[in-house]
Image (tube, rainbow over all chains, first blue to last red; front, top):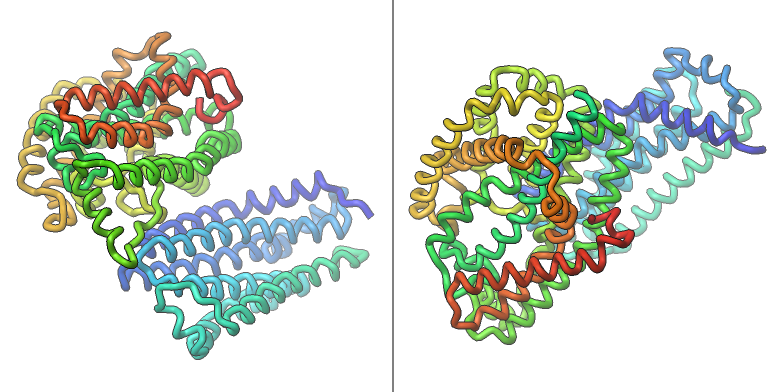
Length: 225
Length: 374
C-alpha cells in the first residue's frame, strides 16, 4: 500500500493554516512566560511557570480541536473524502499534522524552559522537574489525540482532551510526594534519581506507544469510519 | 510602490545598515577608553578620556535602534516581494546558521584572549583584576553563558517569530493606523512606549546578552523593528516626518547635554541598578529621535549607488561577526603600552577593520560563505 504523499502534505498544510492563529497566540504567550521565568524572582517564576503550563495545555487542545473535532463538526471530512485519499492517507495526515502543530511549540517551549533553568539563578534541580512536567504533557497529548481519533462524538473528544490535561495538577502534587524528586528541586545541580528516570521513561514510552498504536489501528481501517 | 521605487529606497537602507554595524566596531573599541566603563569593560585601559564618553553614548543610543529599524524594513520588504516562507528561509540561512556557527567560535576566542590577558597583562583592567581574584578561589564562580555581541542575531530571530505572530493575528492594523496619523504621534508616542522598558535597566542601557529573552529588550528593540516595517508599509512617512528634522536635531542636542550631565551624577553600578525615570525618558527620546534623524539623513545623503558603500555594505555583516574577538586581542596587547588613548584607539580600530576586511576579501567575497554572511 503506497501513501499519496502530495495530498498528505496538502492536508497537513491545511491543518497548519487553520491552526496558525491559535499557534501564534501560544507562541506569543510562551515567549512572555519565558521572559517572566527569566526575571528569576519568585512571583515572576510562579506567573511564568503557570503561563507555560496553560500555553502547553492550550496548544495541545487547540491542535486536536482544530484538526479533528471542528473538522467533523463542520463536516469538512465529507469534502476530504471526495479527494483522492485513502483512509490510510487521511490517518497519516491527521497524525503528522497534529504532531507537527503540537511538537513545534512543545519543542520550543521545552528548549526555552530548560535554557531558563540552566542560565538564570533558578536552581538547576528544576531541570529534571521541568522535564517530568513536559513529559506528562506529551503523554497527555498522546492520550487526547488517541481518544479524539478513536471516538466520533464531540463530547467524548472534548472529555478526552480535558481529562488528561486536568490531571496534571494531581500529577504535580504526586511528584512532590516523592522525596527523591521533591528534595532535588531546590538544589543547584541536575540530579537524576531512579524515580525520576523511571517516571520520565514510562511517560515517553507510553506517549510513543499510544501514538504508534493509534496509527496502527487506523491504518488497518478499510473505511474512514 | 513600484519596483523602481523599492530599488531606490534600498540603497540608503542598505548603507544605513552597513554604517550602523560598522559603528559597532568604533563603539566597542572606544569603550576601552571610556572613564565610565573603567570598572566593567574587560579591555578598559589606563589611558582614557572624558571626551570619549561625550561621544560614544550618543552612538550607543542610536546605532542598534537604527539597525533594528532597517532590519524591520527589510523583513517587510522580503515579505512583500517574496512572501513569508521566503523570509523564513532567509532568516535560517543568514541568521540562524551564522549564529549557531559563530557563537561557540566567538565565545572560545574571547575566552582564549582573556585567558592570555589574565596571565600576561601587567596593567589589567578592574574587570581582569576581579577575574584574577576569582580564579584564586578554590571553587571560582562561573559566568553564565551568554550570546556576547551576537545578541542581535538572537533578537533578530525572536523578532522574526514575533513578526509572524503579528501577521498571523493581523495586529499590524494598529501600527498601520498609527503611522497613518500625523508623524508627531509616532515621534512623541514611541518614546513614551519605550520609557518603562528603559526604566527597568541601568543607564546607559546594557546589551541583552543573556540566553533568556528580556522584556525590556523585546520592547525597546522590537519597537524599532516594528517602526521599520511601518516605514516600509507607508513609504511617505519619512517625507511627512522631514519637516520635523530641525526640531528633532535641536531637541536631541539639548537632551543629550542633559543626558551627559545626568550620566555624571547617576553613575551606573551597584548604587544605580536601574535608571531613574527621568534618565529613561531621556534615553527613549534620544533613541527615537536620533534614529529617525539618521533615517532622514540617510534618505537624503546615501540614497545613491556608491562602490565604496556597496563594498562596506556587503562586508559589514562579516566584519561585525568577527570584530570583537579581534578587537579584544589587539586591545589586550595594547594595555601595557604607554601610548595615548587616541593612538591606541586608532591602532585597535585600524588593525581590527583591516583584518576583518582582508578576511572578508579572502574567505567570503568569492566563496559560498557570501550567501550566508556576505
